[in-house]
Image (cartoon, rainbow, N blue to C red; front, side):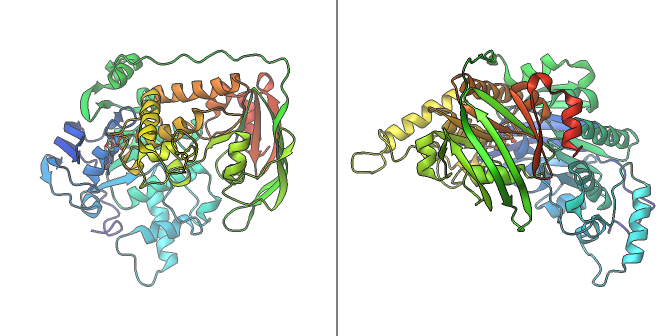
Length: 512
Ligand SMILES: Nc1ncnc2c1ncn2[C@@H]1O[C@H](COP(=O)(O)OP(=O)(O)OP(=O)(O)O)[C@@H](O)[C@H]1O
């Protein structure tokens, strides 16, 4: 039945259970006998370290994967979910970490085309009226007639959620829904969703790595570890320490080294008068000048979509600038492989599986990628030598706690967080003079966040010049020596960390 067919009789919150859900990939048991019960009208958090099986569980619920064993029950009855379409028919929808809206279309257009059977000829007057009536029943509002590309990240995320509600999905799976939002937006969105669950209009299963949000907004929690359900219960009866212990057991979290003081810090990386365009040929970086010293972390804060991605693409050689120059130690620098090796430039771009890995190649090959033509991996005659390569990969996998069945697994089969760890292992393990990282902890569990931030600080303390682009203001305030804010493709605000407070950085982020 279409969403608009019964505008006055929306579905109520759905109850969902998984019964002994098991998923085996080759020799890897990704999920084993996981039985969770998500009560109707509750917000249920799903916690677990990277690779614990959270995505596999929700993909089985959504019909992207067929479980090896086990079943899904909806409102107490076994449900056949062979495809995502079946899941939608049962009222189950999913909101992903990344946006799925068409940027050039308006919110209204996006909503109408998302219907399973949009009309061949659309009566926009009638549709807008219908949409306004629908929005009146919702706790969120978004502008209907503005192209989605002009909406803020918070508005886009609200629209993604609204789209599911418009399609009458009453069980929403949210995959780290707040990772692209500012803390204020995150509280607003979660608060409104919580209101809907309390009213009995919606049930939510939320994958999260943020204890603060779980404690503040979730009713119940389930914790997965190595594919098994390790614990859970009512959030009100569990402390953060209880939940983190369930997630990682007795694994020790590495303490961050203190910030070393340097007496002399020469300029290492200089960005001079840089201009660049985005994919659509629109100016995205407009005259950026920045000098980064050895032993210094400069954090670039900003709301996503203000030119940071384009800047990172230029610095990592993925995009040609239209104007401007880069220097390292005063010498002209072109970000091509040979010069990156010469100047010891390393980094982590956004979406590392796409931009920093060869998805079908093995974990060992991907970890060796930057060093495959150097001894001991390359032999004297230039052939790759698999034994030292595997040994090096095994050592790095162990020290960066990358979860993979073996060094020979295609890297695309690793969980998102583990791909990130594998690439960081490759990039941080050598001698680094310049480190350029974009959202290095995006999607990582708390133990890995702590580990990766420690590694970044270690490189700084060893004298590397670090450019850290992050949408997470807390990350910047925690790591950076200086804060720069990028807004509308320009950098106007640059302050030493001691003079930067959250309010003034926030103002600069919003373009003031
Ligand atoms: N298509 C696949 N083929 C082989 N192994 C897979 C596949 N998908 C997932 N895995 C493995 O299953 C395990 C669980 O992965 P999953 O993506 O469910 O973890 P996760 O808890 O969602 O992690 P993250 O927080 O990093 O997203 C991992 O070891 C992963 O490598």
